[in-house]
Length: 66
Image 1 (spheres, rainbow, N blue to C red):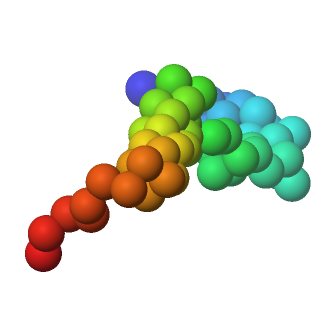
Image 2: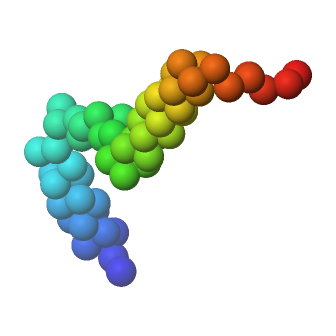
């Protein structure tokens, strides 16, 4: 490849990149890190545990032995 052809190719590549200058892609941190199923499972376990503990204390069952 001669020097002029290579220079022309480099100039074309550079001109394509100039039009993209200043356009920053959005970061991926805007997406949710936890899926809806996992969040639902977590809420179910936490709330279910709290309700179970309240019912257990109302009925007078002894607590866990430590």
